[in-house]
Length: 302
Image (spheres, rainbow, N blue to C red):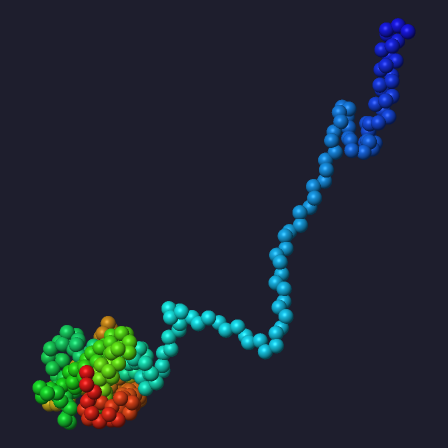
């Protein structure tokens, strides 16, 4: 056998051997191996295991114990504790609670508007018109201050301001706690006589407002197109040659007139009077007053 025949023979043997153990056209190759079309061995890729999500350990139920007491919650801190606010001053137990409700126990928007009107009468309606109105709204009874003041607007404002100062002082002192309890109660006992005085002045202002309505009706200058408001179409003569201007009563486009005050509303005046008198009575029942009346019947030393 010459050299050429030997090469041909070896090539045929290699071809037969390769055909017997490779997958040329997609036939199954020996287990664990795989061939590509170019005859190179290719390692079989091992399948990756699928990772299961880790489960959180479930709490095991505790066996029930006989006569087991429920767990008590920890008390809230003083910062997170909800403050208890009483509905009225009479319901207040602590000094701090007194400071919470003392202002709302008597202050109202209707009362504040009377004080605001008193400050602005001269500026809005001129000095002469304000003087005529003040002279008409003057005290006809013994309601007067130490300086013989009869102007009901001034009397009302002075009494309101006294109550406001007492209220403000009680609020500030109540914030400091029980150490100021005696002082706070002493200030509260100054309120009944002022509350009753404010109610009486308000009642007399209502009587003067009612008289003004009667004068307007007698002079047939009331505007009946709006029966819910006291509106006039002309000036009201209160004395010979003395008039209260209609602008003072009706107001201007940008400024309310005196007819917007509660003194012209009998229902609202009665409600506020009842509230003020009831508060004065409650204070006397619970703490007394500094004028020898009430449960204490004596002054509270500061």
